[in-house]
Image 1 (cartoon, helix red, strand yellow):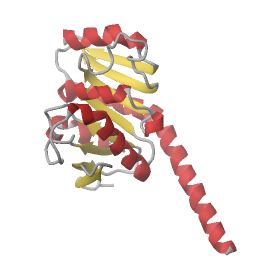
Image 2 (image 1 turned 60 degrees about the vertical axis):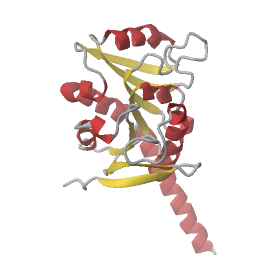
Image 3 (image 1 turned 45 degrees about the vertical axis):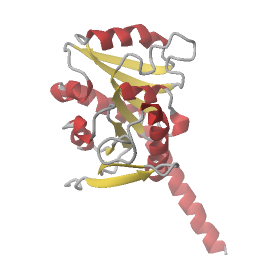
Image 4 (image 1 turned 120 degrees about the horizontal axis):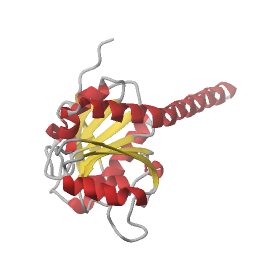
Length: 230
């Protein structure tokens, strides 16, 4: 069965800012891809289509002030903007997997299931992106199911994750491969990492997705029965 073509989307935030992006439609669980600061949708290259081909609904958004999104670049707004985007995605398609990299990865350590993203894939989190705070509340302060990807020869990022990993709250898996590449390029040049991302999301996000579908179905049946009784 042929997959539908990607199409442009808009997400309106509470402050009126409109984030724009691309949806790669599919029937499976939704994944929200968020690029790093200073980038745009092109950063994901072949990663998003490859993940969509495995049955996931992939939604790639551009941060405010990036690409076609409204506003000016504002790193301090990243967590709030991702929170707003997750609320929209969850409302339409159910619990979402969050895929982030670089400095934008800080959002993955402040958001969890209560924000609509119970499962995360964090690629090459930049030092200072929220995982290496020495305070008790600074390391993965919101528990979640996370998989982290790094290049073993990317010394700053690899060391950053090595020292932070044991302090992250929630269940975390760390996958490293012998390269200095980082970000989406790390996954594009090492397809087995894309496979690992897919398997992780399939194992840990699918159950949330199926539970949401069952809940929506039950709610629809209850509404029909109430209508019949009237």
